[in-house]
Length: 174
Image (cartoon, rainbow, N blue to C red):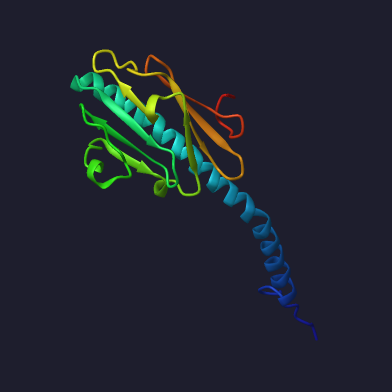
């Protein structure tokens, strides 16, 4: 009599346990890197948002023939507001929030980030309606994480913003 050889179908319990163990190890190695990646993207997003808003403010000032002001509040929770015309906006106080007619960005949009500014008069930047240049001094804004990673948005006297970072990839060094 000839014996019939059967092919094994499926996986053994040992093979399944080995695969699950390997997946668990790989997952444990990737989770911290993924959390760091998300945090780094939050600080990049905050800086890119301000960069875009500086360009919007400059363009709006020229096209509407009205000065446009970006006002910063560096206290926790930080925020910045954008307003056109003669009225200034404070993104934290209720009566003048309505003056932020071009937008308000706050820490709730970019959790676990901090904002600090330097060089600006009264924590504000005003774009002149005639040429889009700054009516006050040039300066910069830093967005940072508690881990020390930060991105700087610098704006020169001509109203042109630039970004840089010594700790976050994808930017020129400051």
